Image (cartoon, rainbow, N blue to C red):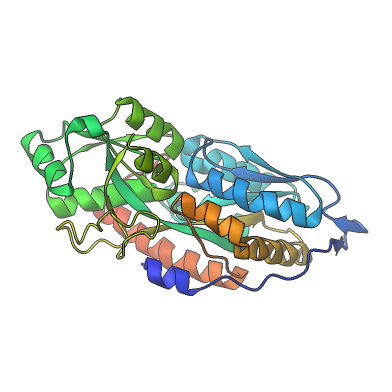
Length: 328
């Protein structure tokens, strides 16, 4: 499993120019019409926030619209399958989280696989996962949460964005390490889980820091800990799980850009450069940081290497924990 420090050490690649690129198969300039960026979750989650911030700048650079399309459902598989089946003409891409690399591998048969159906373009961002509660629960620390869960085994429920998601795995790792039992409630995306947490419909959530940070600063959500080895620079007062007495958990979630397999290499290379250039811009990095999201950026080879390494690690974790993603 890669740590947050190792992710950030990849750095941001140097961006190249912003001129439109000739598209050999069309004899025209790419892009010569709006480009669709599919997000497999509802609005408000980290993938959605990232896509809107980054591709607004990419669109400005190439003088064309990049339209973010939220397509939730099926634990993310509906959007992934739709993009995999779309025409690989350079006008449809997807911003997928790390769980997309391993969830299909436990399905029989898999609805899609990254190796068969997609081409990696660029690692975009990373974030810690956070353990959070509604302030009215009276739970003020990880120790409080563990105490409450042990007093009421299985009665506390926690929201996550999908069965088998990185958030779900992180929560179950925490429960296993703390020797407690809580009941998971899967949502189609982090935004919906956050809405229910704020409304008091669920007492606990384990979600990406990006979707929670602003609500934590406003006091509507209390963040107990981050799952990364180091504290988040955007949530500096929040301890790590290790600091809170639960060592051995180091989880950082990432999101990346993929294209349907068969998309022309010159288009992939151009979009990778534009995405890297956008992630270098101070305004973009600050907007992401406001949401506790770290700008990363990478080339396709780095993303592919990361994808294979983490996919194997996450598969081992969900098998060990007995988690069964939808369709498995």
